[in-house]
Length: 187
Image 1 (cartoon, one colour):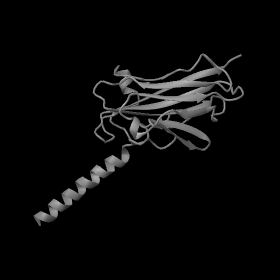
Image 2 (image 1 turned 45 degrees about the vertical axis):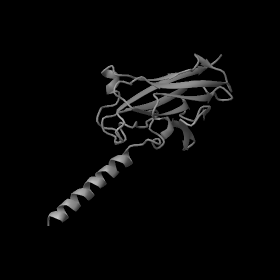
Image 3 (image 1 turned 135 degrees about the vertical axis):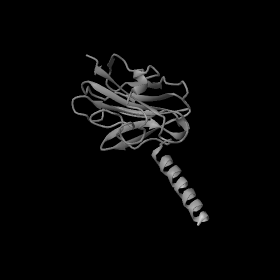
Image 4 (image 1 turned 180 degrees about the vertical axis):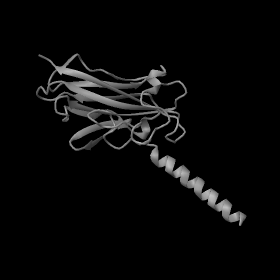
């Protein structure tokens, strides 16, 4: 009887670990978790639920920043973009997802491109989502490019969601941040 209880306990423990590792996304989340245009974030997707969305921002632990966008974009011009998760205290892994869309319609605006193996692009319903790869999770900074739409598309908004993880491989104890930045076409 005791060996059956021990085996059952071991099986339960292994299944619990498997469930936790399936919910953690070191290779990047599914598309559409940027927090923009009605999308959820990884905090609202049942993945990372220890803290409320942007609770780390409220506690002044960090934030997620999108850098490199001009005040106004020139059609067809390529801009180097840097996404930084400034929450580094007691964190070991970071991740993110970002999309660039026309504010008026929610349609894809321009083109996102990777520049190294730390990011990847997924496309769903005509929207590009750039996000971390497993190779990229050990840095809190991600670099990529955005090529503005070839013709003015009105105001473009980039929505991003980012993770500052404790690195234990589970979705517990991780902080999720969100932000958005808008840029208008040059006149």
